[in-house]
Image 1 (cartoon, rainbow, N blue to C red):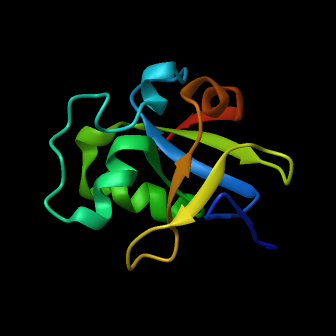
Image 2: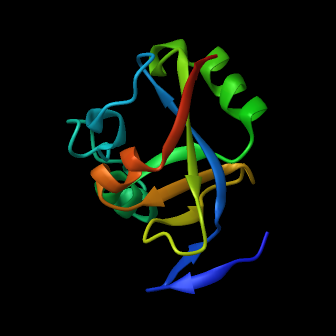
Length: 119
């Protein structure tokens, strides 16, 4: 997968999987943790993802494993497809090479959803 840089972000066009609550993705599914009232992380390196991004996986099996570990996150996966012209950017976060944070307007993220399916 080719990567490029947009405003200091690493951008990877491709398919990502967002864990969501219902069989239809909503704008609320694509709000950052801060907007959903989640506590600010202690690790300062995670403040930006908490405030501006949403967590996704680039591997459906990894997303399913995350749901198995934390079922409260949701029981559906929203397939988000980004092309090279997308204004949404993806940054690989943490030690898990399949975990990314997507940065973009919630409505643009929602518009990038191609399907929603049960875990």
